[in-house]
Structure formats: structure tokens, C-alpha cells
Image (cartoon, rainbow over all chains, first blue to last red; front, side, top):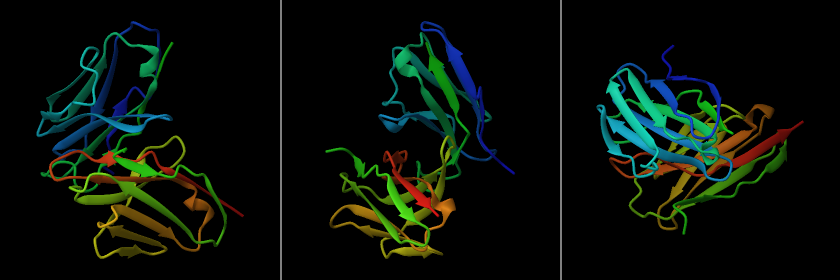
Length: 116
Length: 109
């Protein structure tokens, strides 16, 4: 049963520490997304890749966040340095479409980050 | 005006009730529309796409009104298992999906 895999599932860290979240998209999917979910803001798009190329990272704080796809089986989201306001659930999602984000997205179970 | 607005609820209904949610969007160029469902502390999952002519999937009916820029979801004969948060989702061609904050439904026996 194909699924998006995210690690870690839970992370508690202290302010100023580096956090790296990893995602393995479903094999064959060529669009990958990072979303962040909080109670206040809901699901916010952070970054979007198609065929490993970044298409939209306008929702991502550039000074501390970075997103990459070193290869087709791995997407990473890094926060350095982390701050308490970064506490949220970070979801990775992948999709089979070759046209942007249309159609069904398959989400991972999320990485729950707490920054103290 | 926010890109997408949903009544957060909660909507508390008894089993067997019919309940409807609306969602308004501000970008008239939006092309694709969906409803996603998210259970507590779980990831969102696609419930159904929304087509211009309206579409039905069992007890669920989705409709799109482009003139008034809203989509709706109707749930008939509510089940306990329908309790979840329902997310309104849309996008334009070539862009990522934009999610509403969701409407929470609680179905009780």
C-alpha cells in the first residue's frame, strides 16, 4: 500500500536548534508539497516541487527555512535556527499530476514539532 | 478578503441528520475544487472533487457556484463516523492546493 512517509513523527527541541524533517513521496509522484498546520492558521503551503524543481516557496520564511529534493525519493525541510512560533504539524504530500497541484494529494502522517 | 473562508463550527448534529457546509473563495480564477476530510490528529484525505454540474458520492453531495464563488458539501443521513473536520480546497492550474481552515462536524448518537 503506497504511502508518503515522514520522519520524525514527533520532535521536541529547544529554541535555536536545527530541525530537519524528511519525506519519502509515493514512488512515481512528481509533485511534492510541504504544508504547515496550526490551530490559528490552518494548513499553510510552505514549498512545492515538481519533478524535483522548486516551483513555489513564497510561503516559507526564507531566513530560517529551506526545502530541497536531493533526489526523487527524498524531500527535506530544514529550520535553522528554530523558534517557538515554528511549533506546528508539518505535512508532506505528493501527487501524481503533471499539472501543478490539481487532483488528489496524498499526505504523510505529519511531523509534530514543538520548539521550547 | 481571505482566499477561502469556512465557518469553523462546530456543527453538532444527531445521527441521521442532514448537514450542509459552505465555503467561499475570493479568486475567480480558481479552477479546481475539492473537499478533504481530516480526522483528529490525522492527515487530510481527499473526500471528493467538486464539479461544475454538481456531483454525488453516496450520502455526500458537492456543488459549485462560480457566480457566487462558493462550494458546498451536503451530508445526508449522518453517521457517527462522519465526525471530522471538512476542508474546502481549491487551486488554479499549475499552482498548489489552497486549504481552508475547515469546518468541524460532530455527529452524536
